[in-house]
Image 1 (tube, rainbow, N blue to C red):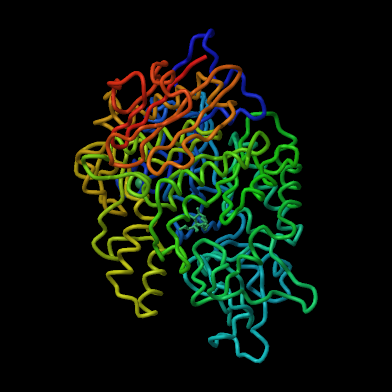
Image 2: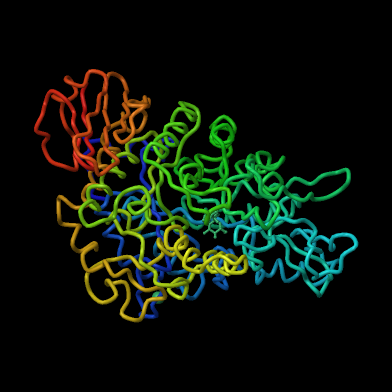
Amino acid sequence: MTQQPESDPTPRDWWPRDWWKAAVVYQVYPRSFADSNGDGIGDIAGIRQRLDHLERLGVDVLWLSPVYRSPMDDNGYDISDYQDVDPLFGTLADLDGLIADLHDRGMKLVMDLVVNHTSSAHAWFQESRSSKDDPKRDWYWWRPPRPGHTGGEPGAEPTNWGSAFSESAWTFDPGTGEYYLHMFASSQPELNWENPEVRRAVYAMMNWWLDRGVDGFRMDVINLISKVVHDDPPDLRDGVKGGPDRQAGPIDTVRFGDPGPYVLHGPRVHEFLQEMHREVFARRPAGLLNVGETPATTVEQGLLYTDPARAELDMVFQFEHVDLDSGPGGKWDVVPMTSRDLVDSLARWQEGMGEVGWNSLYLGNHDQPRCVSRFGDDSPEHRVRSAKALATLLHLHRGTPYIYQGDELAMANVPFRDINDTRDIESHNAYRAALTRGQDPDLAMAAIRYKGRDNARTPMQWDATEHAGFTTGSPWLEVSPDHVTVNAAAQVDDPDSVFSHHRRLIELRHQEPVVVHGSYTRLLRDSEHVHGYLRSLDGRELLVVVNLSGTDGQEAGVPDAPAWASAELVLSNAGEPAERDRIVLGPWEARVYRRG
Ligand code: TEU
Ligand code: CA
C-alpha cells in the first residue's frame, strides 16, 4: 500500500478502536494461495512472495485461514497444536516473517481461531479419552450410550443430533465405552467451554499469539461454544427431525435431529465472549480486530454480538444470504434464489445493525462456492461485468468488506467431473450420505458442483502457465481450466480488469468517510433486477445503483433521478452513460454517483 501524502488522510492516521470500519480484509486460504517449494500445496513462504498482489489491491488486513499443526482432515480446521505451524505450511519463524512483512507494508494479520473444537489428535483430547478419570475428561463432551442401548450400536447415540458433515454428531469410543460430541467431523471433538480450565487455556493461547504481533482473530463457529444442558431430567435432548421450522444451514434433518436449538447461541455464549474480551482484548491498545463466524444468526442476535457497549465481537459473519439457496433438506437441497432475495437480505442487516452493530460484508469464502457463479453470471459474456457489479453492490454497503482470494479476479466455480475431482470432507460425506439415501449420483454431484466448498479452494490463478503459477509441482487440487484467461498477470496492469475495479472500490473506502461512516438508505425496494441505496454523511452523498441481471434497458427510478443522472459519476463498470437525464442500466451495469 503506497504511502499516501500527509494531506490525504489514510486509515492509519485515524485508526481509533474501530479502525476496521475503514479497512478492507483479504482472506487467504493457505493451501491454495501460493506454493514456494513445489510440493503442490500452498505455504507461508509462498504468501510472503505474493504480498505485492495484496499491496497493489490496497487491502489493509490479511485474514489467514488456519496454518497450525493439524492432521488436515478439514484442511486445518482440525487443530492438534495451537502454538505451532504445520510443517506443510512452514515454521513459526516463517509466520513471524509474514507478520513483519505485513507490518512493514502497513498491513495487519488476523489469524483463524478454531476453539469450538480441536483435532482428536490434540494432546488435550488424547488425555481426555485416555480414561474417565483423566483430569481433562471434562474438557470435552462425553456421554454414556442412550439408556437401554449398547455402545456402538445404531441408535445408541446419546442424542439424535446430526453433524454439519452429514453424520451423527456422536462417535463411540470403545476405550472408555462412551460417546464424544462433534458438530463437524468425528476428528473434530467439541471443547467443553463450561469448564473454566478450557477457557483459561484458550485465552492464554490467544494472548500468546497477540504478544507475537498478530492483530486479531477470525473466530470459527464461535456461536456454538455454549451448549444447552438441561437440569431436569439432566442432560442433552433429542432434536426435531424434518419439518418447516428447522434451523437453516448444513444439518440434514431428514436423517438426524436438529441440534441447532441446543448448540447455537447457547445460554452462556455472551458471558463467555465478554469474559474473553476482558481476558484478551480489553487490556490491549487499539488496532486489533475480532470477527466471529456465527452460522444461523438473526439480526437481533447479531446486534447482541456486535454492539460495542457489550464488548463481545467487532463484527460477525452471518449466513442469511449464503443460505438463500438452501432448501428444507439443508445445504445440498439447492433451491433457486433471486438477486432481490440477496439484496433484501443485505438490506435487512444494514437496517438491522443501524448505527449500533456492525456488518462484515462478504459474498465468498473458503466454505462457499464462487460468488460470480452463484450471485452473478460466469458466462464469458457477463463474467467481468457481473463480478464488478457484485463487488460494487457489496463494498459500498455499511460494514467491513472481505475479499476471498481469487474473487478480485472473478475466479468462478469449477466443472468438477465427478466426486474424485474433489477433496473436501464435507462434500465427500454428503455425497456418500446421498447415495446411502438412494439419491441419483448425478443429482448428488450436481449439488456438489453448485455448492461444494472445493469451488473456492482450487489454486489461485496467478498466470496462464500450466498450474497457473501456483506451483512448480502437481497441485493438491486441480487448477481450474479457465486460468488461461482468468489470472492475476492478465489483470493487475489492466485498468478495465475486475482486479482494478476492486482497487478503486478500496480506494473509495479509504478516501471517502461517507463510505465508512455514512448512513444507509435502501432505494428501489420493489424492483426485481435494479437495486440501489444511498450513503450519506454531513451533506456528502453516494448513490449506488446496480442491475443484477442480463436484461438491458433497466431504469433506476430513484428519487431525484434526473439530478443524479447529471451528478459526478465516480465509478462505473460500463463506461460513460449515454443519457444524463435519467439512469438506464445495461446488463449487469453498476454506477456510483457522488454529490455534496
Ligand atoms: O465453518 C462453519 C460452517 O458453518 C460451515 O461448516 C458451513 O456450514 C458449511 O461449510 C457451509 O457449507 C467453519 C469453517 O469455516 C469451515 O471451513 C470448517 O469446516 C468448520 O467451521 C469446522 O471448523
Ligand atoms: Ca508448499
